[in-house]
Image (cartoon, rainbow, N blue to C red; front, side):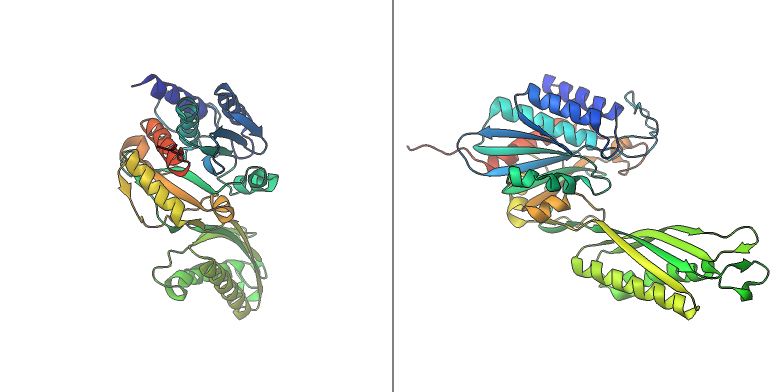
Amino acid sequence: MTDFHTRLIQQRHDFHRNPELGFQEKRTKAIVAQELRRLGVEVHEGAGVVGVLRAGQGNRAIGLRADMDALPITETSAHDYPSRTAGVMHACGHDGHMTMLLGAAERLVTEGGFDGTVVLLFQPNEEHGLGAQAMIDEGVLDQLPLDEVYAIHNLPGAPVGQISSRSGIICNSETLFEITVDGQGGHASMPQAGVDAITVGAEVVMSLQTIVARKLAPDAGAVVSVTEFLTDGQRNVLPGKALLKGDFRARSLQDRMAIETHMRRIAEGIAAAHGVLATVTFNTGFIETINADAPTQAVYRAADTAGCDLIRNRPPMSFSEDFAHFCAAVPGCFLLLGNGEGGPNGQPLHASDYDFNDDLLPIGAEFWVRLVQDRLPVRKGPN
């Protein structure tokens, strides 16, 4: 193991021991800024941390994003660097994403090999879909205009270091919904005297599943999930109110709008059939992540140059990604990096015993360097 790899592991483990939730990444941001300044990188601090590397006379600029936030999960890992913060852990690998990008920054500072500007985007609050937009609203893309933007996410269950991506849709949108049923409460022994909100709500829950099964194309890749069912009922009191909460995922704006329309019709129609009212509200925090073709082809070339196993045109992922907001503003590419197939590295993202694979740290740094060199090539002088 090289000294470079050892330093990256130490840094990653420090991030892992000290996780912070979205928009609370105070220590994390300070460490990132400190490391960038130690390398001599220009640093801007705001909602996130932005490092700027310039070389040569090139006028092109590309952005490389790493997310910083952890999750409200109690860690159950067996390794010797567990979270020191009760109920909070890096269960999605953001500790590794940051470390790979810091490693790439070190190599780009010491080795150069590019002509233009590299903007290192250390983003807060990815998990709630708020951090990218916060940085955009602060003006990061106005102050540092980018030609392209890229992001890596580790993928448990895939071979270590395997890179996969695709042009077009790569991650689904996520829309949160709430359905309120206003029935008429009553005594459990006399249900005919009221309108039991549980009965109405249960009918809505079951009917919502027909949207994906019967209203969308079989290959749409949409998912509708009711995750909470809350009422004001008691042991012998039929509830007059029910609140259904959940989310749905979609791979296109058209499907997203269609799902909203069908959900309203189903909830309001079933409620009307029972003589009560239902209201439906939506909040889309994560839009669809769309990869542009030229950046995706650049990812393929950089993966080959870095010696990584590569899967082109992989199937889209059903999860959602805050990086979508950067891709909506600038042509970009989101790619997956295999985290390993067994043990903690193969556990699902957001599992309490998941862990980022330290073997990926130099691989990810190498990929970032190769990508920068591909997109910001050094100009050859006259013969």
